[in-house]
Image (cartoon, rainbow, N blue to C red; front, side, top):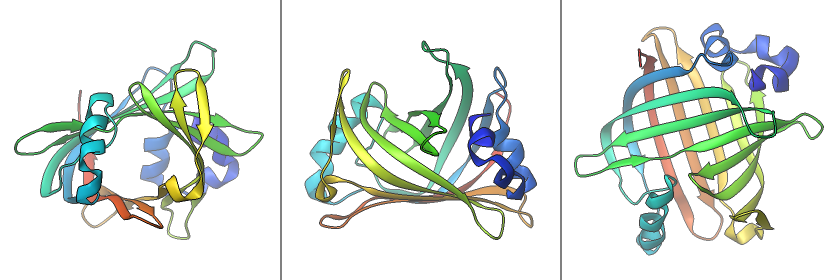
Length: 202
C-alpha cells in the first residue's frame, strides 16, 4: 500500500514475491516465520543502553546464531487518517524473547518513509527505498532524531546509526531473504542480522 505508492513505477521492478509482500492492503497483514542465521548486537559498552531499549521493543543486547523469529506487517489508518504500516519482529533467543517494532508512514513530497522505532518510539529515521537490478528492495537511512513524547531533536552524525537493509527472494530455496546492518562511524557495528523467512498463517 504505502510502499507501492512511494515506489510508483519502480514497484513493478521488484521481484514478484516482494511485490506480493509489500502491497499490504488494509486489513490483510503479512505474517511470516523463519530463522536468523546470525544476529550480532552492539559492543559491550552499549549493552546497558540496549537492555533499557528492550522495554520499548527496540534494540536488544543478545547475539546468536540460528535464532527463530517471526514478522508481522499490518497496514492500518492512524489517528490522522493516514495509512501506516506497523512492523512487529520477534526474536526467540534461548534465554529471552526480544522484539524490534516500528511504525512507518510515507512523505510523498520528500519521497521518504518516516520510520518511528520502538513502542513507544524513542527514535525516528528517514528511510530511502530503492529497487536493485535483481529486484531486491534496498532501504537506507538518512536524517535521524531522538523522540521525547511530542518533541523530536535532530541527532548529530556522530550519534546516528547508518542503516542499510536488503530484502530479496531466493527462487531456489523459495524463501524471502533479509540482511540488516546498523553502523556508527565512531562506535562501529551497532547491530546486524541476516536470515530467511516464509509466509505463514497467524
